[in-house]
Image (tube, rainbow over all chains, first blue to last red; front, side, top):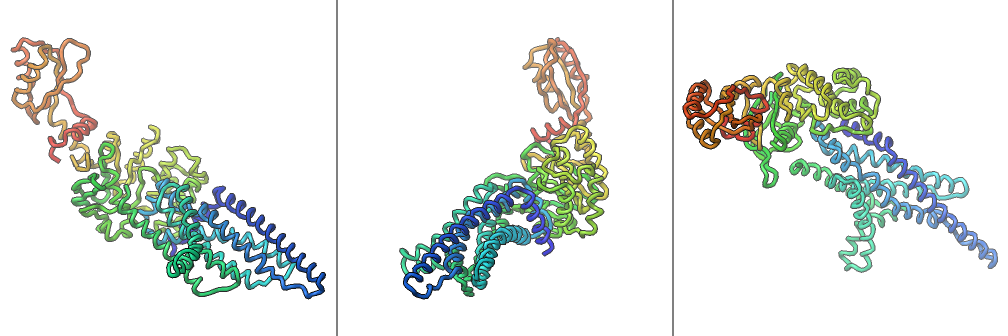
Length: 261
Length: 316
């Protein structure tokens, strides 16, 4: 565990000593801010219109829910943006070690592969979490000017953390396959997109296959959290997904040992 | 301290290292000499647990590099061909990190990092970012990281590559100073380096050991096959065949002359046989002209070329 901690600290420091972390954060918050503004504006328009209609017909105003009508689509958009953001964080994790030859230092030190995998994954996850934490500002704005339901916001953030963990696990695995960061990042984006769109196959694949595909779609599970529902089966899916890919990362590193030139 | 027996490493269809056996005693400095792609790096990578051998065994301090890898890793400091540096870190932080993953106590590191920087004369660069260091300083940071946890065994892959002559001398002195406390294997393709720093040499070529001895013995042994350089004026072909026919001569090869009339020949003879008298008689008898005759000693350079180009003639 001590080794994991040492690797984690170095990795995190390295993120913040390069412009990458700042660029990713700035870009992500910019686009998240745009979505928040756009979705909130359209929500307010809808709210205003339905209130006017209610007054016109002299009826009680229809129930309007900021959580479900503004926040849920906002979080869903965030999740899609993250498909393109997380790979930028994870692509260097191992690819850079291979390119610089520092992998020789790690693999000849008394550190086990899974210890470095955990340290690196944690560092990427912490950077991801701080990225997500930046969006808490938008939730705060809602609390200042309205009465949103805190429960759904909390479950959405739990969902985002689990989703991000799964993305990081995929990214770190693909980063062990090549010494080229760009290739690692690109492959991660493709694979994450696939894990999103397989859910759509539900509609055209046969009933058996379709439901399996829908089950592994990472984003459809996230939608449950965005609705304010925490279901054990979703949590289990994310956690086993993370565990599976971290294990693959470990295996990939072990097998490297047998074929390195 | 280091024991290697019948080590073989095969990559696909290519054999990088074939049936290598040697051992290094405590405190010894072993020079690992060979042309590029001879198998030096492969052997070192197996010793440092970076990759497993195809067959054969290797152990360090009694621990098997494959079966007890963690024990071995704790005891070795390794400088790969390219120093494994994190370019965005400062020298000081980097060394502390390496010390950390080698399992050092953080409190111990506070005194050990400056100590190692002092020893490798990079103290002045402590706070600089590695990216901004010159090649020479990077190489020394690489050596410093290998030393940080005061390992029993040091494995240095071409430690003086990319340094200027003054730095090379400094690094060689540093390595020599480390012998005794540490057991060291260093690889190089620069010969003087071996004669200056190592107590023993292993010459490796195409994955096999072609010679293994102390530095002096190796030079002496090969000088033993007394070489003779002669310049003879006469028909080239028949001169060569007649010389070869002399008793005690093992090989004759033509050499470029220094712009005189005759042709130059390098004659190798059996140890202890002096053919000069017979040779002179032969030349005079044939009516050729003897323009020059002098004994030639072999430098380590020649020994090396000799061994790596015609290995089968020299018993390992």
